[in-house]
Image (cartoon, rainbow, N blue to C red; front, side, top):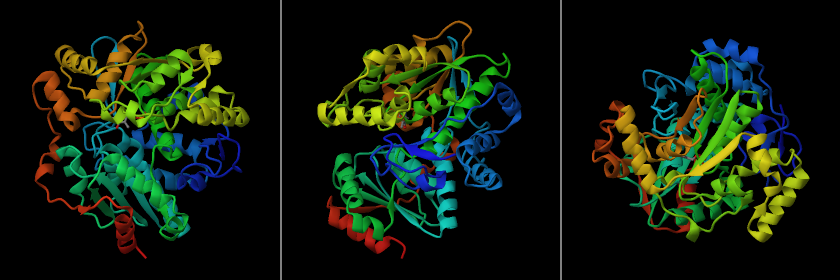
Amino acid sequence: MKYISTRGGMAPQSFSDILLEGLAPDGGLAVPETIPQVAAETLEKWRGLGYAELATEILSLFIDDIPQEDLRRLTAAAYSAEAFPGPKMVPLKPLKGGMSLVGLSEGPTLAFKDMAMQFLGQVFEYVLERRGTTLNILGATSGDTGSAAEYAMRGKRGVTVFMLSPQGRMSAFQRAQMYSLQDDNIHNIALDGVFDDCQDIVKSLAGDLDFKSTYRLGAVNSINWARIAAQVVYYFWGWLRATDQIGAQEVSFCVPSGNFGNILAGHIAREMGLPIRRLVLATNENNVLEEFFRTGVYRPRSAAQTHATSSPSMDISKASNFERFVFDLLGRDPQRLAQVWKGLDTDGQFDLSDLKSEFEGRYGFVSGTSSHADRLETIRKVKEESGVLIDPHTADGVKVAAAYVEPGIPMLVLETALPAKFAETIVEAVGEEPPVPAHLGDLASLPQRVVNLDCEVELVREYIRQHAPA
Ligand SMILES: *Cc1c(COP(=O)(O)O)cnc(C)c1O
């Protein structure tokens, strides 16, 4: 299995080669040369597997330069009872109205990003060790991604994390989560600024090619292919568990979406032959993607046009993984793709409305949006009808999914976070604080480890110089 760039300008590379890179050298994204196919009999054979074993089977279709027994060790460590302490790994939770939640948020940071990050931590350590090199991960976070990355990379040999966060702009829960980590290889740097200032400093340091190569700077952002591949696993898992009793048949998935990473994995699973009827894409008020699937026009927004909402992890102006889906939509033709993205650069948008009939007809995609009022109403309603408290992002999913439920077709809504992370909106919806999982009960009282710096690129550069391992 080799990987190529969506824009056609990269010689085919192996999984381990693209693992540590961001964009392809031509500015495109790495995609598998061909999508592996899974036959119906194979699916049935997989019914008896545990989550980590299923992950080994599926990931080995995308990774042929790591021996399968090593991969087995990595997935066992990633999807261990220590990282996912609940009674079940990725439980399905039935709701009223033909829907079930897929419980992806039982990991250390209570959001679905742990599902891919925990594997990423293992495979980074493995590949770095095998190549005899090290990596300094530099990132900026407004909460979710940074904490998932830190929990995945803590204590990993060969990896050091420098995570910039905006001082005083994260919730008390998010701060406690990140800053209570005491591992030597995790550096929390709180800057006196907003998230965009943190992001600018990351761009500036990563753009300084001398500094970048001297200090072996890397990233773990949402375009990383290993994250997408690890996410494909839970679509198979969700399908298997939803059909254990009723036998092989189609199911639909609904995915609360931002950067198009999560639902892209669903698209890949469907292309691999998993019987998925519809992929329902849910957005919040930031409806860049809903607009595309409704009209065929992709129109990224400016920072000023991006709303700060009560499902903040979906507040995106453009969707960084979307190019991989458009590549398939254009018949995997890198020339056409490069043309379309050139148009995006010059016109600020592109129009693929001539392919609109394929969005649903060929690829199963439909979409919808949800507002703050919808979110509150849905959280209330699900609690009342089903006795389950859901988080604001999952609520966007449930709201949009409801319009696409069909008789006899299970609708699986991905639970992208637990309500404990977003107490303010939960209190607004139902008038009470969400429960905090037992293993995190004492989080708020743990000592915190964070350095505060003025928001200046030179101060961050100096900090990395002094703290990056030789
Ligand atoms: C990251 C995130 C999303 C959006 O996922 P994408 O892969 O960016 O589409 C949705 N909900 C939560 C809670 C998240 O953390």
